[in-house]
Image (tube, rainbow, N blue to C red; front, top):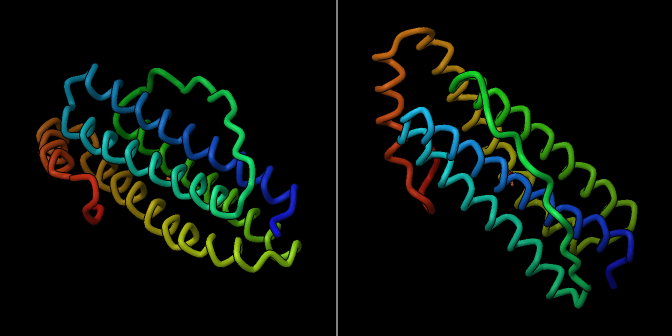
Length: 168
Ligand code: FEO
């Protein structure tokens, strides 16, 4: 039996994952506005990934016979200074999500909810990857500094990312 407290926290995580999708969608729109379509593609794939994260929790709640309650999604930021500013924000956001997942695991442990604890294992592993992929691009953008050539090269590389494949 899943507790009310756990259901509420997982429902909030569905919202947090959808908000993540919304942020990355806004970042995609920003990159299109500055003609960096490869970066926009990377964000498009990321948006889709976040939707699958929300769906995983949605399905789990459903499986546990818990009531799913969807809430309003906060409006995301619209503009950023440059590509580095975007990816630093993305990295920071992923660190925040990791903190949320850790809190969910702590709650599952406190509630002796072993099924939820086991379910969350996937998210713990996923967050390692999520943080690493955002940080890698932050580091590459720092290396590129003010070089337009390097930025365009990176744009080409990020344009190759496909949904359902390993991150670059
Ligand atoms: Fe759903 Fe990017 O964490």
